[in-house]
Length: 243
Image 1 (cartoon, rainbow, N blue to C red):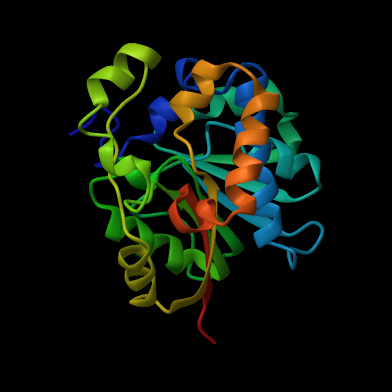
Image 2: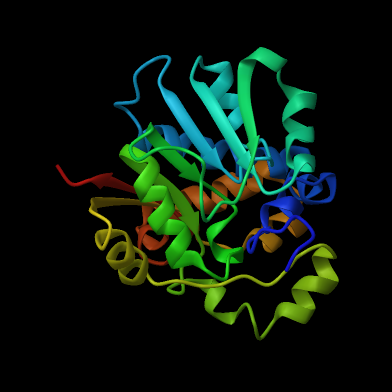
């Protein structure tokens, strides 16, 4: 069991400076902007000032831009250290933070209109329990991201050593099918799935190209011809609570 006493602590690594370095520079900014654009596209009905829970969001990839847009952001982490990057990038009164167990969130049912979990699900062993907990505390909508098995990721385990050599700070992750994730959410009354694949080409390739402009052109072409929708990954998924 981890030192924190919690069973799932994958967000400690994603809240680290080492992990943030994977999104440094123009290419990293392109990754994060694409992620944010697709998230906002999936949340056109999010009212100004709405409360958003970002589970495992110490990486600050979403909390910072959402807080800047006036949303009331609450972030959870499995260790006190997960608050550090948030505190560096946001005023103290711009967000709320709580160290807790992501599998037993300390909030009543239906506490937040929108619940997010990014950079988390593929690194959690007990992911069905995590999805159930996200659904429990959401009153309306859950949005997650995950790597889809119907993508270049299917080769990730074969080429992991090469990827490790190229990136240095990568780690293994679980792959999921769209049906697998959607059906698991449906068990907890979360339906009407909307999916937005992010990229067709592997992110490690874009990092090695080192040209955000060229990466945008490549991915724009893939999206226009429909390949990204069919085989893109990671996928950002929105599901809504059945009424």
